[in-house]
Length: 255
Ligand code: PEP
Image (cartoon, rainbow, N blue to C red):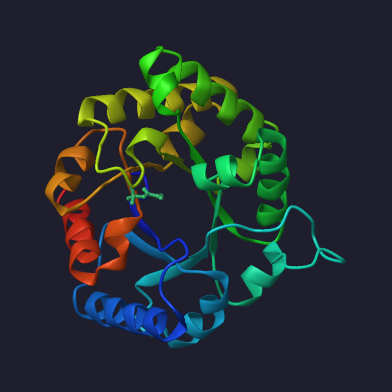
């Protein structure tokens, strides 16, 4: 059985007090209604990590960061290292989100460097990939995602792949209200799993958790999650509302 995950990417939202409050109410909810069969992760801004980490009591909500530095330590003003993230109690980090790729010019080799540093620090990596609208329209989307995975992840050793989660996030669906159809998600997830199977073998491919991200909400989550290669979701906007996020986790539990 593969691990099912629902992860919330808060992006640059929520001031510190608001973030603590949302995390506490999710923690309370999941202490009463354990997300059995699915792991719940929240990924707030860096400055929230330590405070939220100390306040999570249920053991049913894990913590992740949204990014990490591409260097281990030193004179890199404004950066936050993978080691620092891990030291807060966070267990995950998102790497390669399309907003990092496009607004901060993070390319495949930089993302591989970050991934290696994160794994070396003991973090698990949620590695994002996905095509832009033009690539969906010109039919190159399988090739684009293949390149992102091959360059970003395939330098890793097989034992490192065990700590990787892949999130397929078609860029045209992120924050737009447009969602990939369950069929579009399934065919890309299968494509990704087959790439991993070819490179690392069946055991690693079958255990790999592949999340869908892109305007996932309570009304479409169960349809998308019902597909065999969709193992959960990376949720942006809807992760900022407790009722929406918990409804998405409930949809995952029912698959
Ligand atoms: C995301 O940014 O990872 C994301 C999936 O956003 P949204 O759910 O808002 O489309």
